[in-house]
Image (cartoon, rainbow, N blue to C red; front, top):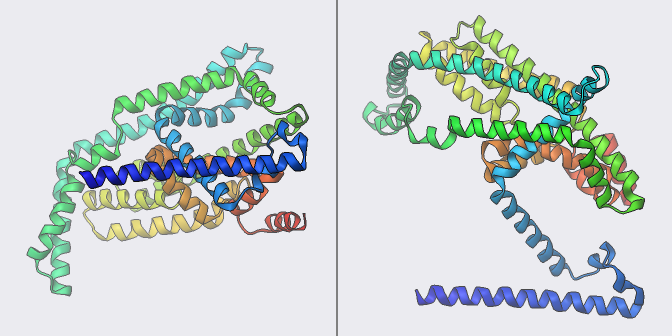
Length: 409
């Protein structure tokens, strides 16, 4: 206990010493700049910051990232529906403008109708998924029995080919089987949100979406007024470009989701898999999460197929279907309908999904790519941030030209 207190006291003293050192170095740099240029006291610009020692800049950056990450985690319940509603609002702006200009509706009525139409579409998808899940719940006893038989046969195959007895496999397989077949398992409660939480999340999301549509001009004026007068034109241009490209990006994602869901549903129906529509919708929605989504959908589909299909070979055909779907989606569908809007490299995509899950869980995984896309659009259009836009993108001629241009400067 005494050692812990001593370590804590020493850590606090080190932190205080670090801040004192930083303050001293910044003050010394400021005095040096004042001697060189008496007018430098009026403002502390980016050039002055870049002249500071490396360890001070590193400490400032790390402290800023830590503070930002902490705020993002603490404000999850507020920021998550806000970001979703912002994306929905960007998507619905053309529809709201159509109701305002063509039908001569007030902005409040036009915004409300646009939100109601989006809500109706989402409700329809949730109704189809819910009805399919209800049918699956009715067949749950047969599903459990089929899973148990399949696992028993699999243990026999392993025992015959690898010499591992059923008893040695039993400890590992039983724990896995209980997690898969028990609807009251602990992992269900930790990975799935309760119905009340989902409803509350959707309610706030659509309320925020309505207000974003209603006050979009006021928000635009606020964003322009935050910056200096000479930068207002650039800010307005960036905001308009962000809205346009993000709208195209979301539409591309929706088209991709529809194509994947339809293809998987039709293919599984041809193979005779039960709940093909449910599995197709799950695949289309989960595919919005790069790499991890299609793998999660594959595991769910293979498990349901194993528990409902009398022929175990059908699972192999399901695996082949998902691998082929992923290959076609990554190399043909994605570049055509999504890749032309915003290109993000695979490393940043995976890191974004992992960090999003660490911060906000499932909602963070869905939001990570749109947020990175917004950042890339902003970085590409702000000269001082263009190097960050390069590292987020892929290797193509436009990115190489931009990098060469920055190198020349």
